Amino acid sequence: GVSPVSPIHVYTPREVYGTVGSRVTLSCSFWSSEWISDDISITWHFQADGSRDAISIFHYAQGQPYIDDVGTFKERMEWAGNPRRRDGSIVIHSLEPGDNGTFTCDVKNPP
Image (cartoon, rainbow, N blue to C red; front, side):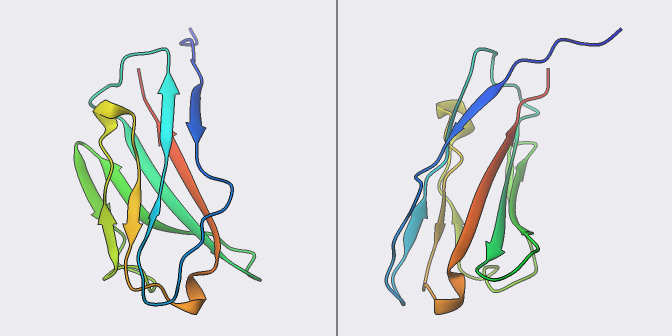
């Protein structure tokens, strides 16, 4: 049979502003009527302005943060979240002009 699915509501600010050289926190909070499982995963994607493609820049799984080893963010990213507190936020340090774009937080909470 098909297992039931419950939605996860993910909340992020519509726009976040930062200054070149500074740091910015990309907030991602979520809500689910279900217990937050140990298998929860959080993935951040980035789509640069003018680009059609989004790339994965950060992943949290099995209780561990993983910064993707590609792109310009790999040396400048910090995990600031706590899934038990329904928080999947990250911090980007030393902002660069090329960081302008769309960031997406994707949360999965398997049963």
